[in-house]
Amino acid sequence: MDSRVSELFGGCCRPGGGPAMGGTLKARGAGGSSGCGGPKGKKKNGKNRGSKANNPPYLPPEAEDGNIEYKLKLVNPSQYRFEHLVTQMKWRLQEGRGEAVYQIGVEDNGLLVGLAEEEMRASLKTLHRMAEKVGADITVLREREVDYDSDMPRKITEVLVRKVPDNQQFLDLRVAVLGNVDSGKSTLLGVLTQGELDNGRGRARLNLFRHLHEIQSGRTSSISFEILGFNSKGEVVNYSDSRTAEEICESSSKMITFIDLAGHHKYLHTTIFGLTSYCPDCALLLVSANTGIAGTTREHLGLALALKVPFFIVVSKVDLCAKTTVERTVRQLERVLKQPGCHKVPMLVISEDDAVTAAQQFAQSPNVTPIFTLSSVSGESLDLLKVFLNILPPLTNSKEQEELMQQLTEFQVDEIYTVPEVGTVVGGTLSSGICREGDQLVVGPTDDGCFLELRVCSIQRNRSACRVLRAGQAATLALGDFDRALLRKCNWGSPQHEELLKGRGRRKVENHCPRGRGN
Image (tube, rainbow, N blue to C red):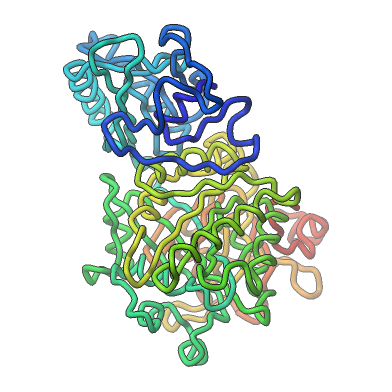
């Protein structure tokens, strides 16, 4: 591709194949209005670029599938054209499971033409009307100037359109948090979810610990879940305003569920269980800037690669180190990621523009690995991670979701509780199908290979009530007075079928323990 795409869009596109080629992606932030880095008239190899008409900047051609839509302009469309555009927006939102990205000023073949200021203002006004028609909200992600074949300044604008699907309460993304012990995993989650910076002695992590020995040692030994919400405008919704979990869910259109896993080698089996059973969409690998790749960092990296879980990296505690130390840690990570066993393309995020590019590239290419450098004490670059999480789209498409929902209902049991005045409660993930309140299911196999009948009394997701559970979603099911002793982890709940009750279907689910993406 033309190198001007790299300049316009943060260095994410490379000649001869893009991110899969192998080099570090460093998306330069826009210091001026054009956002171009380096001389405009020359390529990196020093040769003349040639005339603008012979080397037009462009993006990959628009795909019929997916949630990205190119529009040259949307100025005063007719009523028929407007209805067609609204239908098109509904399709893109469906493809993105509630999120779509519009590139205004771009032709269908990817050519970056740009619009004059008046045309761009009119196009954004039309886009806003379209979003109102479908009940969505729009947020301008970034603007870039294009000087191709024109003496007048012309802009392209990237817009995020978000709408919570009618059959869902919010968009959901599960992120597993990996990293060596004492790298600051729980502290970072505490800062993100509580809205207050750490004091340098671990105050932010205290609300995340579940056991006394965790508070005393400062080390996580169990799996805990924390939530971070974003409203339709991209603003953070967390516990900072003394909200309850229910209020966060009600105020959020997108929910990030963090799965905080153990970092100590002694609890490696707990980490493996969390990665395989809770089916995270992606993983956050935390590396301390002052220690670099140490302890279980390589093991956790290997687990993510083996299970084919996409991951991005956060370098923490940059406030404790000199700039040269942080750079040395980043270079160490880049070397490891480029090795044949990983074959990843590191992308260092240093500006808000980089974070937008990183989120899109991370979703489109499994080889791209964004790297953030931040501090939970000073708050340095913490906003870049929030921008990334807000824009990061669902990593599974709508077709896969629909296919899973049409299959037989299967709920994987990962946790078993007894709650006063509620009874037995199981937590886990709905692997396929749809589960509703009042459904009659069978669970098993038990130790003697039998399947037992039960009824789903109520469902909760992220600590708030939910009437319908769909494939891929994690939740807890209240089973009333069902005997807890008859349940065990790795059990499966399925709809009632005579062959299961009689034992003829035992082969289907016997010893069906949770497995990862790569199995």
